[in-house]
Length: 427
Length: 71
Image (cartoon, rainbow over all chains, first blue to last red; front, side):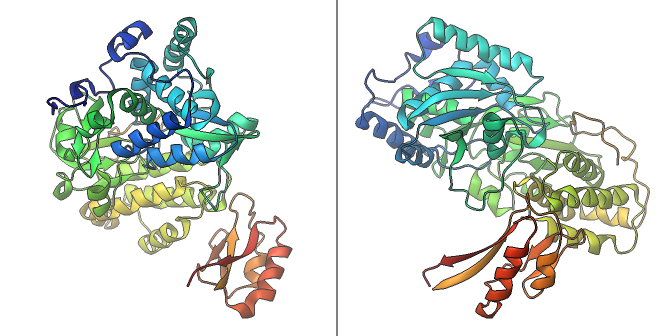
């Protein structure tokens, strides 16, 4: 790690999301008080925007929107806001937000407090799905400690939305808080504000908020001392699949994919990487040294998404695993839009036939047409994610695809999946 | 210049398909009967039909908007 000599830059070795004490006393001892002045004036509000701008922080929930621009837009809105802390993490392979909210709840809550004070929000709502009681418990305890310690400016509460794949999509989350329906809404213009009652809903991924808390205390230089100049900072990544130590690692942006996977100790040769989640992108060995950063990933058709890397260990069959993911995704539609409700099961059925090695002759033509037709036609991007993932599989697993199309037997269909699913998946 | 743009609310749409019957020049149906827009600008001569298609949609899922674009 880089250490800055002299100047006003703080000690950058303190920059890290996971190494801090989980209790409030330890948290304050290590990082100092929450840097919100007694009187919040325009200069302070602007200073936070400037610090985020200088840091280059982008959202860590998948959309990678610049944090400074999101805060500046909130400041321009004269309505009171609700800071929605998105701890939904609906991706079955993801653990980063669970780990962060359990191990550093005060960091996440501090980030929410800073954005609330600076952006004019009067309520902080932390969303943790039903069933994840340990995570919710950690946050509830943290909030109790903060109340007792007078560490709260804006009221904090934990709410428990239902646990399904698209429940954490920002419009679904805002709608659930507003009226109890956990459904994405159709927003032709994404710049139009989400609402909770008469307030603006500002949905932030938990990890993004933890970065905000550190940048506000340590300065943008501490963040920029990590990563690469065009994409500074650190990121939490969940690494799973054929690795001995699956789990969450904090990495520097720009670290080659292969080095990130190495930290989880692969158990075998890796055939492919699934980057970004189940709506992400399969990547073949020739791109394993791609830096984990937006532009290099975009160049190979991928994105960091929600910070997941699944290592598919050889021997394995990417066709079978892709069919399983498509099946799972088809079961996770919120059931609103025709192209998703009918399209995803049709896609899953095509892939299942392929996985079984019993394709009918027009299968590939039909599959291509369906991928084309489903893409971009839902209210949310759930179907688009599936389409992108399947398309990448067609590219990366070309050899396996050909074997399946010829009807050759595949030894892997009967074997357990290397992926994780909360429900049994048959293909 | 002004251009006309159709859009479909996929949550509201229930695949009645009237829009594709009225406006096959711009709207086709997918294999499940849901409308697919061709994505192009709507030619002005289709304005009357497009207005009718939007008005007649039983789910009010089809909308026609004028968007101003600096060209």
